[in-house]
Image (cartoon, helix red, strand yellow):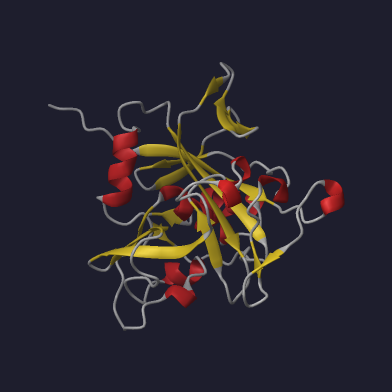
Length: 255
């Protein structure tokens, strides 16, 4: 009988603060054409990231990966053998304000100067979605600015009310870029301790994202970097191809 592999990956969500004080090596705040704040486009516009705990997604179940997995100085590491985790993807996500909502890029924005980078890393993007029936796959710079439907408690839990479809359609759930989904979940909590409590103690994300009463963390100018790594404890089921399939072929990650 053939052994069936299960899919898993490691993830964390780092807090990202801006440095808008030129006297401390930062950059003055940026605003858009409407005078509203938008994220920096130079790496010195950010302060060092505050690392979040490492978690494991395992066939839809979330567990704490343990203190042997950590994010340090831009890399995921595993101890005690001090090996570097294989990086799959990162998304930097900011909640700007209630008007601009989320701005994102599919990279760790602290590692590049966006203003001088080549496409697609030369700008910030709004959240956009690709439809597959009533399933929404989130990514940067895809076709649709609204979700495929309107209903589902997960929409409000993730702060996506403004992205609801204008038509009264049901929605199957959310899939697509894993690092973006992780960052959205992090924004549903005020900090890493609350995220741990929601994911581990309350077990709120088991495919279905249950409603939880934690205060959300969508504060103006707050940034989060979501990171995805291959799971070294599951070498056959945690591969680049497997995660790509999970993002763009399989069903919803959240519903």
